[in-house]
Image 1 (cartoon, rainbow, N blue to C red):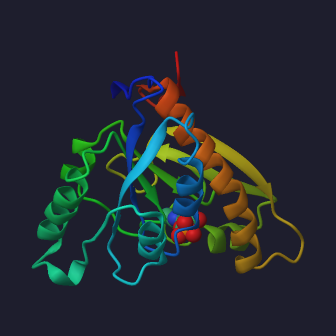
Image 2 (spheres, rainbow, N blue to C red):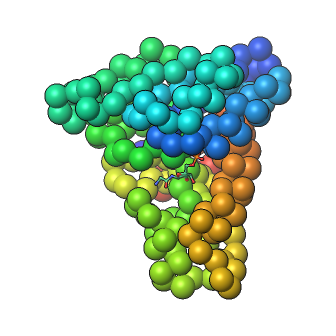
Length: 214
Ligand code: GAR
């Protein structure tokens, strides 16, 4: 993959972000707070969720951001659901897609459409602990340092080129909720900073090496 994607923005043209979220949306909330700043360089123009009850949808409504629900149960099969996601997202004409707690795997056909422009935030230091239960797996393994990763989405599960990471120590006595919350504090800051820099400076990818700006 050799993709210069995104363009350094002029002050008047913020990059268009569409956020996909399945849950409470604390990462979305952080992006919504950041995009209020005129110099941030990006704006959340749409939120798409696979769960009609996702808190992220309430956050979008409260912020005056349009949203769409694409629930698996409303489609005949997974292929039709993926087409539905693609359609819902495309309506917003995104420059970038941000998966922020989106707990579904998208089909390669969707991933390819947004190659180099779709990012995921994951609560572990990839390539360690990919998948659906990274914090539980981290604690079970007994590692002492964990963290969070913003990476490009490719056709694998949490395997795309790494854009940015932040470390979080595992403390004696940590349980899954406590460690999850500490990681999420670091994760929100990392996501906001990384997305803003990509919007302002561009993202450049050569093989597994992703870098922001030239
Ligand atoms: C975040 O910690 C995100 O990294 C994780 O879900 C949480 C969503 O929190 N995503 C994954 O685990 C994906 N594999 P939020 O709804 O409060 O933003």
